[in-house]
Image (cartoon, rainbow, N blue to C red; front, side, top):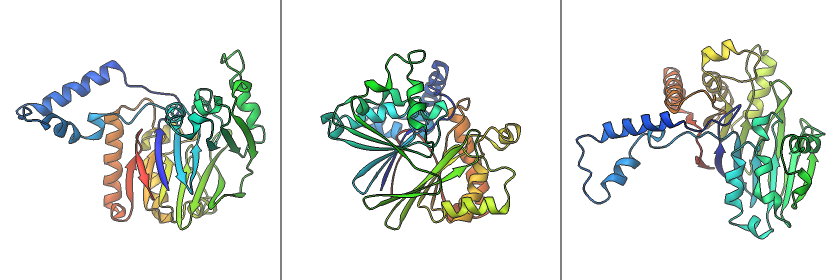
Length: 316
């Protein structure tokens, strides 16, 4: 199972501002002072050795995660990150009108659907796009987004074979040898997590959920769904302080994610759905603080903790 992250921000796309790029350049030039970069390849080695948040960016696109499992292409959510994913897929079978996509929606808040009108494979005749959601009116929701008041191209202009499949909460489905199940999350308007299993490998996508005021039964429900996942992608939009101040907004903090991952026996925890107001440096600080918290409890020795960024690839 191969996992690629194409969009990792929450709420609204957050591209780098010119001032942020300038600060990155200043920081890099300071780091380069006194170094001999005249040798062939020295500049490239220097850049490749920079911290990821300095050499690049965590990214500004909203949620979209691609899975390649059992010879199938599965996608979780269609935030703005699905646009570059679509362009990538068009280089293969989708560009020939021979692709099949399995697209799972967690919910229909705008940051999780806003990229769908720009998903190129959906406009190529011959492609098959299977759309799964626990919301029975999913087709109407996507169609409403592309009404002429909001977007110039209607859903009916998509020439691919679009099939909407109702996937009720608590059900399972088999896609070849891949098993997919879902679970309701704690989020305004409703949201759902997905568990994808191929053999003994399990991947869990649980964006947009809040872990406040939960009973022991509720906590154990999450732990069971996350249990023994090789990779758990989990909402960690806020700092702990912001999570307290924005209670009931439907998002969580990284430290709570660590606790849940520990109880569930997760191998790799991916912190996801980053707050759009947080800079790359702020996200790096959150990751550093999370690692420190995990270290105090010895969790860092059993769980790998990763800050999601565009282009991140994981293999199970």
